[in-house]
Image (cartoon, rainbow, N blue to C red; front, side):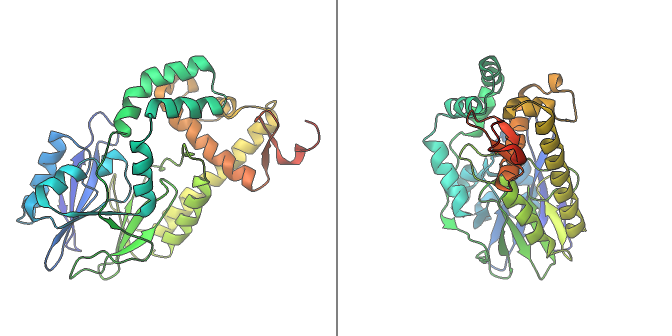
Length: 329
């Protein structure tokens, strides 16, 4: 854990069996309260790490007055319920994240994922295999998580006396992802929106929408805070917000170029066929259950290209170049 010049405490809360290793939870002391941002994954090891971090500022879980989650993925939001029970703290998030929680509570996760994969023309044997391999993780991902007490919209101030902590809505990684700006300390808590080395996953949600278009817009938004130090939820803190935002935007633009060229080369591919033909960090045959994330990411890029007119879907929901749409191809 690290005590930062801004007075915040960075606490690595472990994520079991995950290459990310940990979520960086931030403790934000105020004049009359203590805020926790992204409590982390729900495990006994994680709870012990959080308690140890609180002890650094002479606090216990009972002293926490507020909890803010940048988004409701379980490596960020998993411990929220337990921490609220121990402290009586309020829980805050963006309304779009609360809507996600409500939808997930009513969903059959594996069935929803299977239907989504089939809609993308994933072969049935692949759907069966992916659900068998990934199904337990899906059910764990959609396990009931703590609801919100307080909604935070773009530009809102987080209620913590002695700190000017402002919400910056950054949809993309999730619909209601938020960053937190502390202008006096010149820091931006970036959650999963901006990471120093990893490219955050931007996948088409089960509910559709245009996550990549939103993400690119959110990158432009945070670039305006270039003078701040970035405090991400994974890896390490860094400077150069605008440069990193431009690098990530360039990566996605290059991926769109590759996708458009691959669609032209293939004969009316489904998104699944397209995904298998793209360049990945490992051979397609070795990706395993990460194929779910890969096809979701490809679908997000395809959605952006369709909205721009560069790609289109034919009557069988296969992909064609936008220039060929309407020519009987």
